[in-house]
Length: 82
Image (cartoon, rainbow, N blue to C red; front, side, top):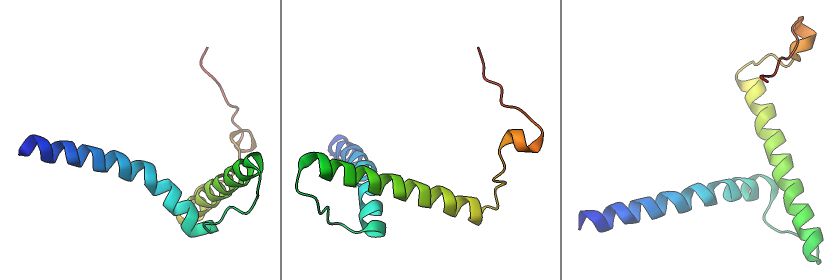
């Protein structure tokens, strides 16, 4: 019985992780996708996801009082590993 419960918990957790972002986007930006062609619907959906991500980043910047200046504006330059 324990193995079945663990399997259910694993499946439910995986499903929850995949559905949560879609629910958040639908809640914030509305559920309907209004375009008729498949490509237009895909573009609208990607636009909604992009808008949601920008909203989340902006909210986190203000909630946590994160410095928005670029590293080069603070007198440092970005270095990337080789």
